[in-house]
Image (cartoon, rainbow, N blue to C red):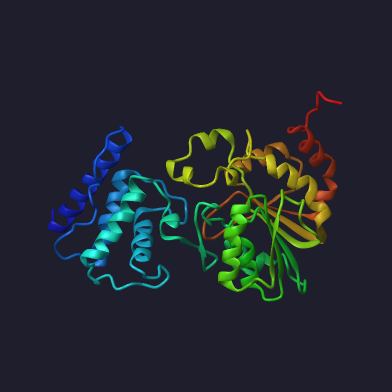
Length: 345
């Protein structure tokens, strides 16, 4: 084993022991992942941090899916370097930079805080958005739909109107405005805190003239008709919510939980969306792991399940006309939950 590999392995073991001790209720100082002395180029620091992440069995899913990408993102942002530009991996880290990196590594490993919350930004559809605990970390596969000309859903529509339902920090609606100069976007959410973050992101990207933020539950504050409705609503069912990794506990539960089967809000959307859509317009909703529940509950409905080259699944599209054709079914499930009869008059 080389000296570098030995150092990396030792650091990983030390971090793993710290995490296990913390989980067992022990107290004590964090074993710094990055060495305080000796040469430490950026590339080596990233590898050491990634090994520490692996040893600590971190959960990803907030913008990355592996330890190397996660470590790169955290260290580059901490050092004031852009994650979108290839860095000089031979760049040495001085003592102060190591201290700052280790402080954030401690919060990521021991505190299980998502990297986006540690660095204060997250990337979505090629743009950097402010990210903190007021809203979920941006990570929807809908980014690919927005950056790929909306998958043709707005073809032939000039100056289209779009609605970003359950906007959170505003990334989907703002990305729509950045992708197409003639689009007008309403972005709604029930959370005042999330809308405050969305407002900061609207100003950050200079789209305050084309993105309007609305407070209220689902369609309550909106004024259609819209040519496209996009939504990444809460869709985590009760069982999954109870077993989610610790990283997700830092996010607002309001943005995750959606009842026993994850479809509490989706039921309302399907029953109410048609009256807010223009003729020929489309509703697109991300339901993630609740996709099987959607398919089972509305087996006769012709949902189009979208495919993404960059990864991600559980997103359906349905045209206004199909919503109208199955309006009775959607209303029944909205009122009674499963399509069965109610015990109330």
